[in-house]
Length: 115
Image (cartoon, rainbow, N blue to C red; front, side, top):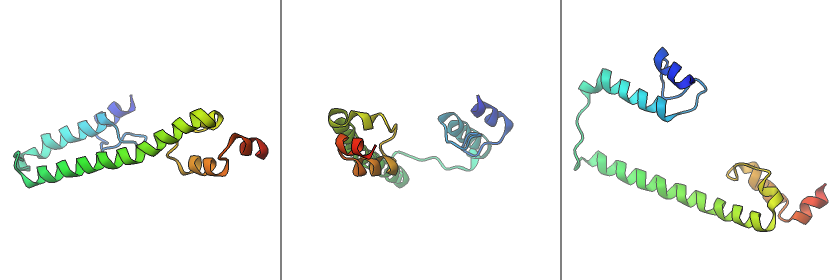
């Protein structure tokens, strides 16, 4: 498990050896920072303005994720019904190449004509 090796080696930057963020690495990094530097951190209270701001940011992030995901779900449903072959062509329909493909070949007939 490369994440655990990275944690144990002390090479923690919030990313795994592969450069991807993971929950294990992020939680280990936070726990280590709290252990070594936590004495200098101030305690946040329920009424702290930073907590309110963090709540707003988290809510807005969730809203943006939902707004980005809904059209992709609609596109996948339409492709499943009208153009199932192209649905299998891409794992991630949020990629620009997948969207360009669906714009270039909007019907199975146009895809078949392209060869």
